[in-house]
Length: 232
Picture 1 (cartoon, rainbow, N blue to C red):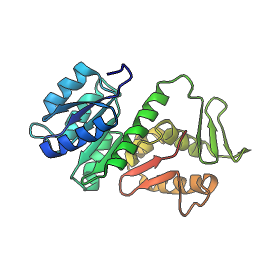
Picture 2 (picture 1 turned 135 degrees about the vertical axis):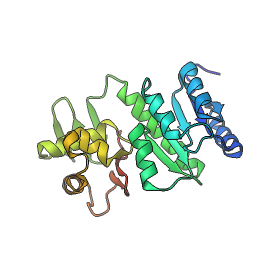
Picture 3 (picture 1 turned 30 degrees about the vertical axis):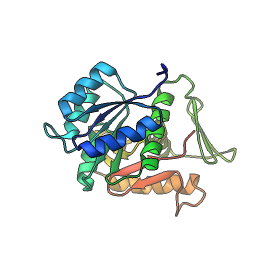
Picture 4 (picture 1 turned 135 degrees about the horizontal axis):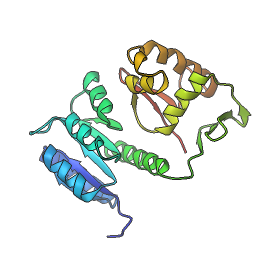
């Protein structure tokens, strides 16, 4: 096994699903460490220092959101939630606890692999010194110069629009909840003011998307938040 092999800690108490995910990831030449409980998963994550963690929310010994919160106390490892829970409040709780993405059971292997690749790219980009620029579609963000261009032409953004775009871009591929975005852009006093986000996301789409009515990059996660996709 090469030194560059991706290591994934899989925290899932349902044995058939655990075996299915393990086989799928190993087909992609990833190393999978399995845990059937939250505490075992935390122990594995601490000892193995994986590249990514996949966690179910319905674990026998503790809630998956608590596992995520404890991981986030000491690690920035990408975390993807796999869960049969579909309520928006539970998705929001897991993402607010620090998860990067959320996939609802049943799920397809191609989608799971796409989410994993997106999180690994995002994490690698965040750890790289070559992160002064980011591109999605026809848009380029130059963080150092604080310039946004679309098809090579500068786009005027208000300070709030720019901060919102930067928040999405810095976490490209990750679902950011309404609360997370409001806190990062407006501060803690506005975390309940989701209507601000709808207004400014509309502004960004008008300025940056090819078809604002059918966005390709600034995506809504209904009832949860927003995600920037297609970033390079």
